[in-house]
Amino acid sequence: MKAVVIGLVVFVLLAGFAGYWVAATDHPTSTPSTPLFAYSESGRFTYLAALKNNTLYNSTKYLTPGNGTLFTAITSWVNVSFDFRLSADRPVNASSVASVSVILQSPTWSKPLATETIRSSVHEGTFESLEAAYDVNVTNVTELAATIEKQTGYTPSSYSLAIDPAIRSSVGLGESATGITFLPGLTLNFSSDQIEPSHLSSALSGQFVPPGDPPAGRPNVSVVAFLLLFGAVGGAGAMGYLTWATRDERREPDLATITRPYSEAIVDARSPPSAASLVPVRTWEDVVKAADTLGVPILRVVRPPVEGPDDPGTTSFYVVSGTTAFVYVHGGRANAPAAAATPGHLPAPAAPPKPLTAAVREWQARYPRIPGIDQANLETFVEWTDRISDRLRWFRPSSSLRQDSEELLLRAIGLAQRGSLDAAWVILGQLYVRLGPWETPAKAGSRTPPAPPGRAG
Image 1 (cartoon, rainbow, N blue to C red):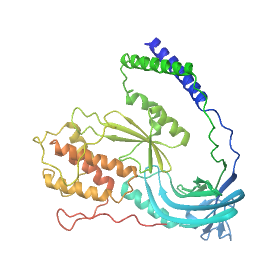
Image 2: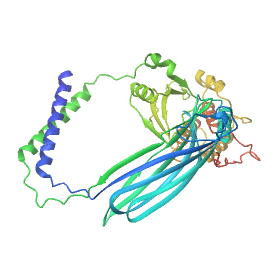
Image 3: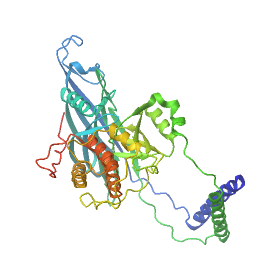
Image 4: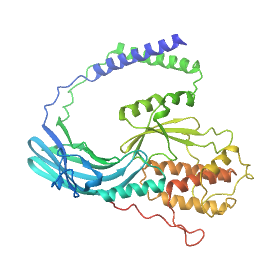
């Protein structure tokens, strides 16, 4: 087995060398073009904090960056302003669009508060700028965070208000142009007693080099290079097949063993964090590296084995950084595609209901039921799948909460189709808690969608 692996590595390296040889003889290097223009972008946040009457700062009513610590108890408003500037080393035509979003977030949830779009442009100039402002009502922010904590039953050690401009610019000279994306961001970190701003300034620079002219002719490609490439690719394919055929059985490491040294850094959560993007990682060690680098806890979410003895369940670990979450899934069939099904068109079970397993009974007791429902009624189950599907339409398609909840909803429908209606209700109970609060419908079967997220702060 060791010799096969060594042979595979040798053939892969040989194929890489041969491929480079072929490319070098087939596409001669052209003369690099001269930069058409150079540019730089800068973003700067500043703030003016209005204070309540206090003894600490005497008669001072306002604080600016670097002039004192912002204490939550004596701060009324934080008036944030943002200044963006684009400069070029020669007159250019430029236009910029800034989409500014304000998000209240913790390690496990996030709530959008406001969005604003700002535009600016310059014609045959070397300088372009745009400005934005947002007023943070400290009392409203803390009360909103407290309300979310009370409703979810989860109290984070801290939360933050992120003000994130996404600036996309087009800069051109003559008939040539290039696109630039600039992503500065201010974070107001709320702890138990302080407000700590971070990332007050950022910058980006570069130059635009137009594509070079193609070469006039192409020399003959070396026959030896082609023969070497084909031979190396064939050898690598053969060694790869032998490696696959003689591979040792790969088993996932025991979960308790690999997580035991990091038990103090693991926090159990009932649902995945709400993040704009999910980044899957391959190993548990990758999750630990991400948590150590970011200095944040590891969130653990357990999916019960509700589908019977063949379903081992899954355990997912999340590390959250802003609107991004790194995730590692251990065990089960977490990556298997969900069965296709459409809420509201659920056929009758093909088999009689299966008896409850011990795992289903345990999770029924652990998760609350949906109030006032008959778990033996298939029509009621169909009505609730429709209500949950309607609720999910209010979340962004890219939201991890929506994607994870849609997967659970399809799993519940699949269980009901196979006759496991009790197990399906267990999953609907999880979705009921995750997507609440719910309004009481006017009559059985009616569905009332939630109000869209309001603008706070």
